[in-house]
Image 1: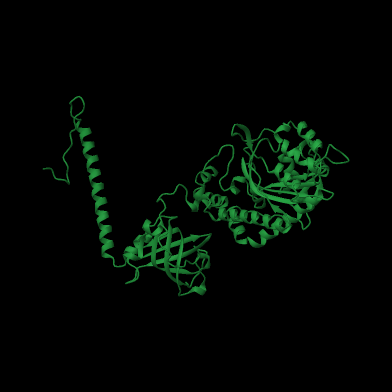
Image 2: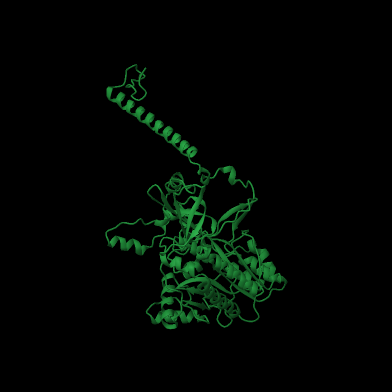
Length: 542
């Protein structure tokens, strides 16, 4: 019988009855020997692990939490302390915390450091072997955790004599128990540390002859669930949350009613062909480009003032830094008494209030974003600057840039005008109104003294447009004529037009893209940075 430690050369029979060559047989024998050795190592490791657990009287103080204990088994009454609440006043107190293992570092066999992260705050936890408290097996378990695993730690708060550089909280937790709630894969497709690195850091390393990993945009978006864990991204989407909250609070305080309009409609809401078409129970339909038609109908229904926060769909093949196929629209419509300036005044107060609040209440988030994406705070006036379209064209003309006075501004002209406005008025936030009628939607009211212009406006941040708005046409016959002139099949919007036949108030409104507001307030270079899971012409996942 052959020795199991030294298996004989294997000679397999081929189909033709001929044995393998000596070289092939030797290769097969080595392969079999490697497989057997691997199996023996695995068995030995499993036996050692089992033995160490059995031999460790403190084995119950650490380990991977069994699934059965994570299935809402019981309400234990335990209280978890948030990492951000770990302060010096808790010295010598026992706490239970949960977070992600951001970094793990072993120092010999008797000590390991685990930095836990949660909600942008971090704390250093120390696992030190000590008789009857912490075993060496527990230190080994902690050191073997994979980064980004979710961990529960129970321990004593201590205050070190020197500042802690690698964590936000200036206390340590001396670990007494540690349990892995959810173990992350040992090899992550992108490292959070790499994804959090600024371009400045990468360039400085390159100049010093070092190479640091730079995570590209497509890679970030492919593994977005990891990318959004970085401090900057956590800050961006918390800022976005605040913008939505402030928008809602502002308009509720101004006696607006929040509405929810359908996203499946029979015809185009904005005109043109950039709509996502679909079949709706045998009828042609599309996804709404905006809530425009229904928010106007709501005004005709006597709500007086309405707003909506909801998804907007645009099927444009735009591959620019500021366009998406789906984004979050912040839409407003309101009765006006006599002038569309009433709408512009609401815009003025809304955004000045919003900018003030963000700067005052979100300093931690702004600092985290600026660390990776440095930017200068937005310049804005207490009373927002208003310029007519003709005045804007004249400023461009004086700067040597010719613009069609009855056309629209292209991206370059908008940016140049933004620079000129900043130089002359010291603001990066302003309103441009009285646009040419030919470049506005069919429902826009023309100017009374010159119908080639309209009672409409755009709003700009850092030289880029964020808002379009104005007074709406409320006369059904005029509205029908305008729709036909813009190539819209009036049959598809007949219920919209009919709503103005029963007495329609003078009204106006505007729409703004949430992602674009955040992008420009933070001076980011791409709107995909402010969309949680972006949808553009090339991306439908994740």
